[in-house]
Length: 148
Image (cartoon, rainbow, N blue to C red; front, top):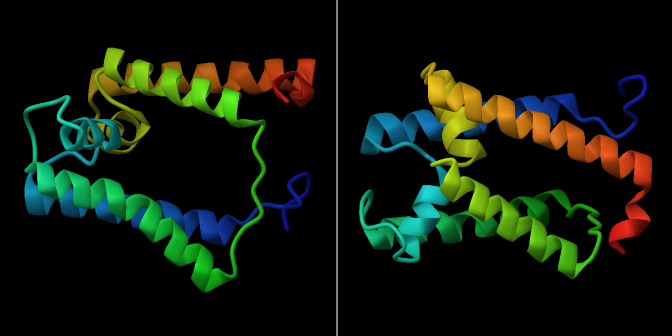
């Protein structure tokens, strides 16, 4: 347990990061594609015409929640709470719009682009990290009951 972070799980975080990096490397080396979830989801939904075959994109997109459910089942689950459905939907839409405007998402820019030292990805990652930090600061100042 880390001081100030009673719920921290550094080993699980490290293992998760290693697995994400390994999966991104395998996709780049094996399929020649960047593991950007927003681009793959766009391909699966027919919004984007380029990239992997649509069936492979659907397999990737469906594998994300199935993999999470499998891990939750194996480990006994996790306790999660959300601010409510409306903020969750609004946040999801804003993230999706931002991913389209920024030509990528946190996985494409933050994991794959930064590791390749892409200038565009470095700027995008700095921008969404700054926005996330500002959002947390505002939420902590105003209180989460605003979104309930």
